[in-house]
Image 1 (tube, helix red, strand yellow):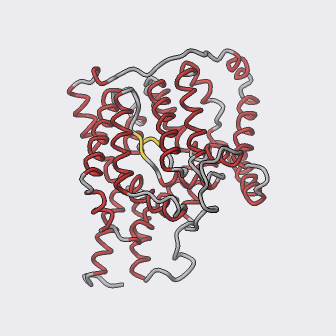
Image 2 (cartoon, rainbow, N blue to C red):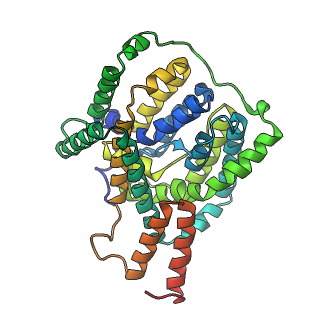
Image 3 (spheres, rainbow, N blue to C red):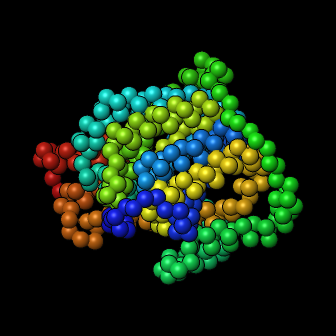
Amino acid sequence: MKAQGNKYKGNKYNLQELAGAFGDLGTLIPFLMGYIILNRMNPVGILTAFGFFKIMMGLYYKTPIPVQPMKVIGAAVISHPGTITPGAVWASGLFTGILWLIMGLTDAVTWISKITSRPVIQGLILGLGLGFMREGIKMMETDLLLAWVAAILTFILLSQQRIPAMLLLLGSGFIIAIIREPILLKELDKLSFRLQLPEFTLYKLRWEDFLTGVIVLGIPQVALTLSNAIIAIVEENNTLFPDRPITVRTVAIDHGIMNLIGASFGGVPMCHGAGGMAGHVRFGARTGGALVILGSLLLFTGLFLADSIAILFKLFPRPILGVILLFGGLELAVRIPGIQGNKFQKGDLYVMILTAGISLVNIGMGYLIGLFLWYAFQRKWLKV
């Protein structure tokens, strides 16, 4: 990876940061739609939690470190609409919050990161990038003509860097959505502005919610959070922004605080995904200002427009979100040093590629198998 920009001089709030703020919408919007539309969870707690913590992370870390839904938990909930209760989702957030707070405060997460070899980390990042590209292409397949026109236009605009590609993408998406569904204009005229505050939700939890939240949702998420949202994001941040380094201990603790508070007020489990940072950076973000901008918009929407969120979701055509996800994944995948040069030994390349390949199916398994293979090469148990 290559460091971005000049010496940090404070968060910026300009057109470039505005464009970069939307770089992870390809991941964020589909999960929000799943939680809110398919599973009928209250959007107030979800949107305000994302908004508040995006603002906090942007101000604290001062880099475009994303705040995204936890993928394993989100996928399990969305793929079984109506089966997993909101209480189970909140319980999974409490479980992950307690776990990572303990891992950070005891510094156990630092020990784990130290035994994780660099080829494994690079393999995780490569696998994440390829996985994002695959998911982006799937979303683009819903309208290939629109998607590939948007993708070609994005390549051209990113090469010129005169017009923020993301803003043109979103603007085009809004126009296309309205052309395809003209009734949207009337619906937008009837947006409901009403202040709603998130409510304290823990008193609603039942014993069965805790069982489902921990066993079905929380435990399967652990390996992905460790590998992607803690180890990989620290590697990515510190490579891109060496003047603003972060530590795995700090990130683990913030996962704990973020999810304990979020789950207590109706939010869903949140994390920092390496792919999200790649998306932010690819479309222009260089400081935490991008997160403050996006967080402010989400916070405003959660507090004042929660009743109209289904209408607002219609402004984001799925193929356009797929293009955003594709470019975020591409940015992440091509930032792996050693692929074009000769920095890795053959064994390291084996570890990196195998980790990446398995991570396309299961990132937790990719992490464990890659780590085992690397130590097997180091101890001469295996040879290539």
